[in-house]
Amino acid sequence: MLFRSNIPAPEYPFKIDYNSTIMLLGSCFSDNIGNYFARHQFNVNSNPFGVLFNPISIERSLRLLMNPDRFDKDRYFYKTRDLWVSFAHHGRFSRENFEDFEQNIMEQLEMASDFLRRTDVLFVTFGTAFCYKFIPRDLIVSNCHKIPNYQFQRFRLSEKQIVTQWKDTIDMLLAVRPELKIVFTVSPVRHVGDGLHENTLSKAVLLLATEKLVDNEHTFYFPSYEYLMDDLRDYRFYAKDLYHPNDLAVEYIEEKVAESFFDPQTAEQVRLVAQQNKFRAHRRLRVE
Image 1 (cartoon, rainbow, N blue to C red):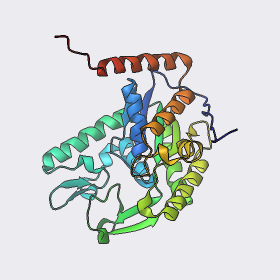
Image 2: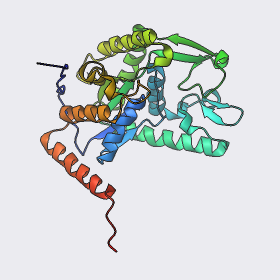
Image 3: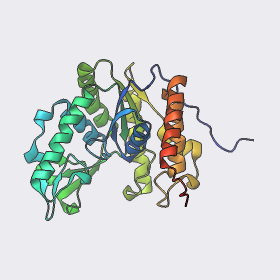
Image 4: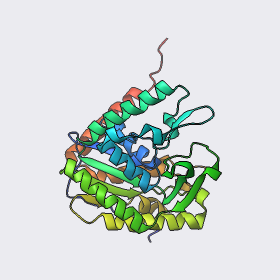
């Protein structure tokens, strides 16, 4: 008797090994998988702009990485009451001191731009189809930075808007890096702040858009959303907030990543690195 839908790990016409260069952009789920690659000593760059949720902000970050000289500080930098913030970045980049703030952002932008041009596999995780536009600058923001909500317009992207914007960017990426493989995924994290029904509509838009984007030998889909929503499908795999996956669920999806993208030799290397990590973390008993 079956009690769950067991989704097999998808197969891809390429593999990731220790010679691969990996970049991840998108929601906090990208951070989870990025941390997995980093823990196992892969050459990885995860979320150089911080966590990004909507497809337009993620797409814009790639354009900025391809053309860092076009980063418009006057458009993206903003002074709140206490902090300097960037509308292209997550709040972890915010600083009280402008010189530190500017230097950190520009250094990270330069390093990530160079990394992207060497990237073999790019993972892109869409979190929500809802966007916030900062009305005074007519700018879709990556983060509202606790600025009063009356200064923003909230709206949901359409499938067509996402696909149209991303098609051009994919072409630009492949012109710079013809060998690049792009793996799209939709975050299983539920954005309950949008409302449960609205979150469902948002995820549906993202799933429809990724289906249209995965249409050639360079673009692929990894079913992280389906693993949590259809395979695990139980609140015991969620954190206490009931919308983020817990450590057990993340570990399960990490195993699926390994099954899908590692050949046997790389899988063995990953196992050995995990053993070394466990040994280093082990606290030896003191002998008196």
